[in-house]
Length: 251
Image 1 (spheres, rainbow, N blue to C red):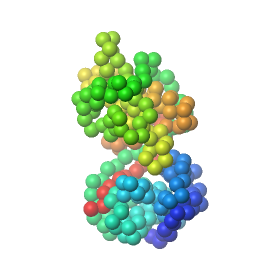
Image 2: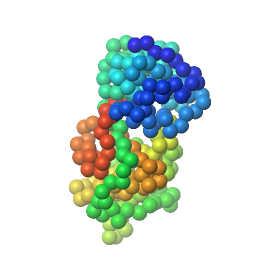
Image 3: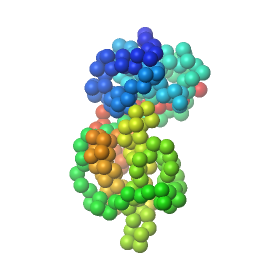
Image 4: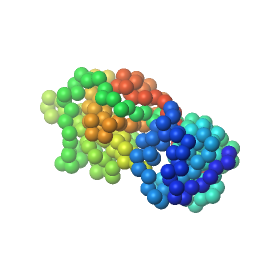
């Protein structure tokens, strides 16, 4: 698990061509979009990693053993700055042989560069502005208490929603951004708990995806591995499923 620490030669993260390989979309969309001159990165044979210093988070892509080597190198050389990491599935087990690992979450980084098929009810979606933030927050707290992004959160460029015939909000979602690159990231899509299964989430997700693809050329999202209904929807809308990831904290 040998690795080289690079400060600040961020272009070296891409010397292996990893950003164009299957399973390395996190590098392509998460780091390759912008290359800050002072970003710290690491490369090893078959893997690359970079540091989100504000969070103390190391992102890595490539082969699990090589990626784990980069995470370990980062954590052992910068123990006061590295608190968590993301890597290809299996990285957590390899890192856990050397350091205590907690809070393991398996997820999939999904992305598309194509506009999805038009979904029924998509014409009901409307953009929402700051005047709707209180309404959005109340809706999310009721129907999706674990939402990842809230109204007014940094990096959110758009909120959208669907209303019923009485004007009541019945679904909402946001376009946020990947912290390291600013790439569009769909977040906090939620529907009224009493109306699930009627296609509201599909309509909203399709509309947001179409907006992002037309504006940015692509859209990304995070999917928890045990969310089967979401997986079926994202498959139907054309999101690629090539990047199984794991995130964890270093205790």
